[in-house]
Length: 119
Image (cartoon, rainbow, N blue to C red; front, side, top):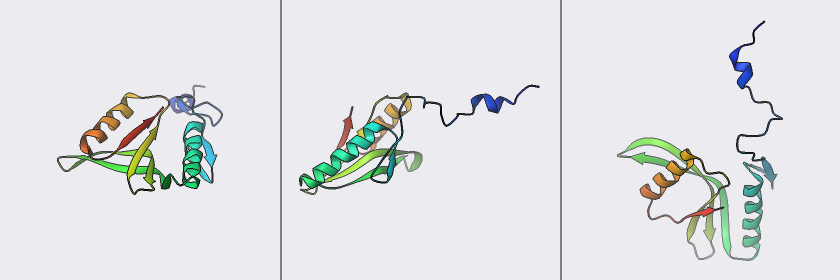
């Protein structure tokens, strides 16, 4: 008996992800990797130190060209500093071609934003 082709591509919950990241929960929120969760903990320490006012995970950018929706880009963290300035932080382990394209498109469409890459 031959199995359906779908069973060959079904990912088991025990299989590692494509880029070997391990989802991690910190403070009740699930992050895509341990690196992101550690960075969230670091941001909480910076709040306690008074360097930043607040931060939010998974900030959405609606990327549009000539009024047409191209794609959405979810950057890892929106960070608001004590002086009121805002930065957008991307915590990155493996860089994919798609991510590089979205990162570059975000830089071009929003040149006024401060985008920070954390490796």
